[in-house]
Structure formats: structure tokens, C-alpha cells
Length: 123
Image (tube, rainbow, N blue to C red; front, top):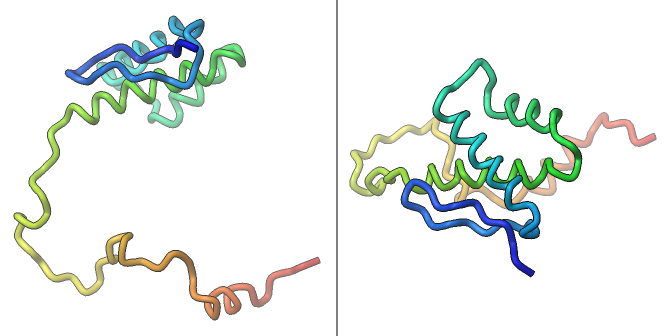
């Protein structure tokens, strides 16, 4: 089955979506809407804009439009050069800083879960 794509932009390759090719115009509309949003920021934040956009779309077109919109923004982000690796930056020691996510445990320790569950109504 052929899929709808977000057309190439910002030097990035076209991006296939999960939507059938019959949604191509709708996906492209989402991509163009993202370009307009990025070119002329208005009073709405990105979440507010997406909520308003969804509100005004028929149900079957919402997800293809949102995917086209977000994938176009992804193309834009991927086109922006990344800063130099952190190892080349000056090192400052901050004992109050939050550790990187990789250093955090997968979840709370069992004893902290029991402590936080005290006083919770189970009924």
C-alpha cells in the first residue's frame, strides 16, 4: 500500500507517514499549515494552535493533518545544525543540578513508593 508523504523541505528528504496515499492532499495541507505557523507566529502557542486546528477539522482528517504539521516541524528541526558536543564546552560543577536522565533510576525505589502511598484512599 502506498503511503502519503510529507514533501521534502529544508534540505531534508520526504518523510513517509502512516496514512494511505488517499490522504496525500491532507498531509500536505498539514505541512503547509506548519510553514505558515512558523513563518508568522501569532498569539497562540503550539499546543493551543494544534488544538484549534483539530477543532476545525472533520474527524477523519485530524490525524493526517497533525502528522503533516508535526513532521514538517521535525524536518525544520533536523535541518538546524546542532551545537558542538558537550565535551568541548567548559565544565562547571553544580552540585544542585539534576543528573542526566541516563543517570536516573528507571522508577522510584520500592520504599519511596510505599512512603508516597501512605494516606491514599483505596476505596
